[in-house]
Length: 368
Image (tube, rainbow, N blue to C red):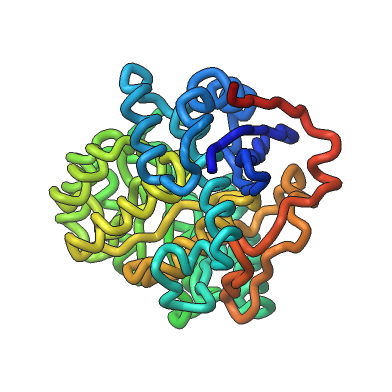
């Protein structure tokens, strides 16, 4: 059995990937969102030629082959393209063996994965943010939430700026007051602060019993992040932007963070994200993968988190409507009592909607 055909279906910046073997087996995955057209071009021109004609069950070997053969192009788009093929191959393998991806990964160690309600907004007022989070906790049973602090991507990394003066402090205080002490609060700075400022912010977070402080410093500067981790009792999280394994090894070995956050689709797929989770476990660290939209990344992360013993805490669940992903899956994942049940069907357990695929930009790479 060999990989004979690789297809992409691009719509609304969501690149779905389908792999077909020479014996007719099919698996479906997805490349990373954002920059989808560039990712698709990279997939067909640089990645597909390296895997066509190869054994689809040797996913780890194929992943390494792509990374090795593209060593002069170590940037994000090769990894984003690879993630589509990797996730399609895991789906294909699951269907061949009649097992879910979580089962193929050695689990699941949990049948339902708890989630935190993740806000993506910085322009919302503290009062409005607290009100909507309080409603979601009441209606959907979330035991944890996350809010955005600092200026985030709208400002230079490490600029020590806020969305508006005093918002960070007022937001954390307001959300804690409205949600009470029983709900975990996480915050995400998206690389907003220098180490010195992050430590001062972190002292404030400790007063309000914040659970994790995500990406406090410019993400490439893990030395500054380690300074923050060493100075604070609040857990520091990071890793979502990283896509090179050696950076994760450094991050974990130097304990730059307490919680490691690989993004399956930024990093290159399930094989590489699992390696990061296992590496973190060897060093006694927790893994909470990044999954910030309602594309298939939610589904992939659900299976990984179900199978990895050190995915101990609530996983990310965006509360923002992403209309550009509407109708992508035949069935949508749903929160019940703050958790999501892991689909137990073969592969991912859910299929991409034929209607969604019908009007996409379709491209094909085929073996000789």
